Amino acid sequence: MARLLQKRDMPAGNKTDNVGLKPERPFQILGITTEVTLGDLLANVVFLSTLAHQFDYARLHIKYRDVRPYSRDVMSLSPLIDLAEPLPGEWPKILRRFKPDIEPRRYPDVGRLNGGRATYYDMVVTNQMARSMTIHTFPDPVPLALPDDQSPRLKEQLVTLGLRPDQWHATIHHRESSYKFRPHSGERDNTPEAFDELVDFIISLGGQVVRLGHTGMAPFKKREGFIDLARRPDSFMLQAAAVSLARFAILGPSGPVSLSMGFGTPATIVDSLDRGGVWGTVTDLLTQELTTSDGRILRNQSLVDAGLMDSFLLRDLMKRDSRYKIRKTSAAELKEVAFRLFERTKDCPAWRPALPLPVGPKPNSITWPPRPTYPMRWVDL
Image (cartoon, helix red, strand yellow):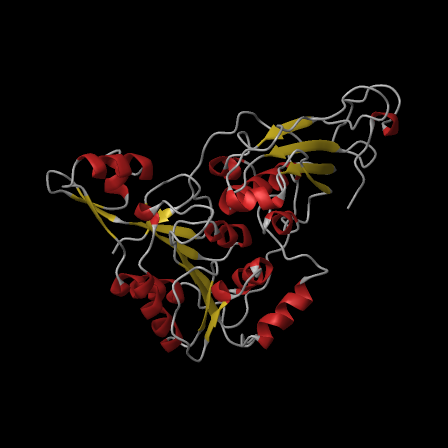
């Protein structure tokens, strides 16, 4: 990765001349993110990488909170990050084990700005500015990529676990409240039994299945063609590799969704109750089914039109009025989702090739503020 330039490294004279147009004067970005959840952190990385890719020459510095097992690994998934630096001021790990959501001892700062040894930034972006819904405001979003120094080893490990390079596979993930970092989110959870049944259906279509997740998830029955990475500790990079190579993915509204969107793997998000955070161009959406207090049954666009596609709002409504009820996606509906994904991904009979870095003319400028865009589509059952 290229070294970040300090003020003393800059050409003499006008330091704002031809910024981003020549190698000796790259457009330098500092991204500061205090996000810790997987989905938000991945979206920040894709946004900041896409921002840097708007220039012929750019250098990207990200400061982040290194407090989750996957934090450092997420930073390795962008080919455009020149320096990823953990923020100081975190509490010791033993304390964070008991209080995983504890705030840092002190909040991040930009750092030295004056003097010859100050890093010369052209733009400072916070996680509040690097919003997932504005990624597609910019041309050619940058895909995630497995690090060159890890990709061969990760693929070898997947083969050792039973995944076949000459056969396609799907990745699945269902949200559960057993996740220690976010245990109280039952309205966003999926039904594990329905996903367990889905495994057999995908295998019957001729594929293999990789389950993503964490070690506290409900056990699935063992069977030929099923690789359960959720039960494997410290397997985030293996899970990322499995998503990047998958024919398609079916996922609940949780962090791994951003892996499929980042790698450009066709996917359906099921049981979603929020619009925010959905930014993949090959991702579609199937919400939960809501029965309202007056007996209306709402799903997908009708849920949006009613102003009820908001998990926090629905949580409060259901507490106040027991007539509001949600129904999770059934096993039969999951199978229909899988078949539709199978039909539209016939160009992927084996492991999916990695998406290349976008090429072509770059605007060498940025329009701010970016306007939210939602490139998703609904699954109409």
